[in-house]
Image (tube, rainbow, N blue to C red; front, side, top):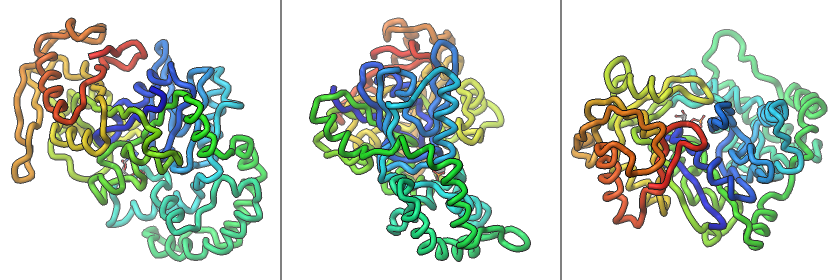
Amino acid sequence: MPVTTIIGTQWGDEGKGKCVDAAAADADAVVRFQGGNNAGHTLVVDGEKTVLHLIPSGALYDGVDCYLARGTVLNPETFLEEVEALRDRGVDMAGRLFVSQNTPLIMPWHIEMDAARESGEGAIGTTKKGIGPTYEQFVARQAILAGDLRRPDDAIAKIEMFYGERLASLRANWNGEGDPPFATVDQAVERFRRRHEQVYTRLVPFISDVETELRERIRAGDHIVMEGAQGTYLDVGMGTYPFVTSSHTTAAGACTGAGVAPRAIDRVIGVCKAYTTRVGDGPFPTELPVDSGVGRHLQDVGNEYGATTGRPRRCGWLDLPMLTEAVDINGCDEVVITKLDVLSGLDEIKLAVDHADGEPVYETFEGWQNDITDVRDTEELPENARRYLEFIAQRLAPFDCTIGQVSVGPGRRQIFEY
Ligand code: IMP
């Protein structure tokens, strides 16, 4: 399929990085269309682990071009650090990594604003990377865009015009003691000039007209993977508002985020963990306590600690009504079930099949004890694992959706067709 969008059906951390990496093997390009370095995509190749926060998961294939499209937000320092870390690993991104000239830049005051808000009553448990405040300034039509780095005087004019308003807001959100430590307008301009000389100039060679190029490549029939970050229920519009990220994480976001038409997308793959996790605050109907029992098992065996912030993830059972709604919202053609191996060793497995008065209604399945990490065929799975998957597949069918693949470990080869 020429253009495939891969998105998360839960609250992120579903294992999208691995699915994108698998799809990238046959792709010409991989595109990030939303989010920033709040994401953390873990890839394990030949036992070596790489965590990418910004650069698309196609990075590890030589011939695959990587794009950061206009719907993303970009922290220049993090971006350059990631490029250098890949270079140290022998992966050279020169000439095959492109940043949209229209991508808003995360500036120091955005990170300060995120931290200030998170220290107050309105905290929602963000990653404190400045994501929300950057999108906010973009929507206010005041953002500094990557393309402005080619003409630093334009960026400086924007700081002079708009930073005063941000500074007032920073001061109003300051919860610390003593004088607020924020830069004045003059200091912000000076800081920008210094960073431009030392850092930002190194970003300039990566900047291009990504959206036009993507449309041309789609017209030419190139195989392109649109890589979603976070998950459906963190979408600013469709998620568990206000406990959401500030971008459109759903499949439709690939169109506005990469500047391509809805009809350009041929296939949508939803990634779903065999159970559920969430980092940050907000509702989580099937949540389990993690101090002991099944919750502890999921957190430990699944290594459920954030790839970006290291925070322990909240854990719980898979929630089918949420999954089918996500499949519906995103128009998923198929779902990849990941981390099925983490359920091995449990005596029984619960699956939320309905919600009544806000509480999940569970169906209970017998568990399996065998290690399934070497399984490469549905028929080789323990019968109880097949029953669990079959039940999920039946619920997906009315949405014209199937289970496409099942993943049983972090390695590139630990995945098979269902
Ligand atoms: P922000 O994206 O840093 O503004 O955080 C908003 C919410 O999204 C918080 O609950 C974060 O924990 C969550 N979030 C952001 N990025 C990720 C991710 O990559 N995986 C899981 N949760 C995320």
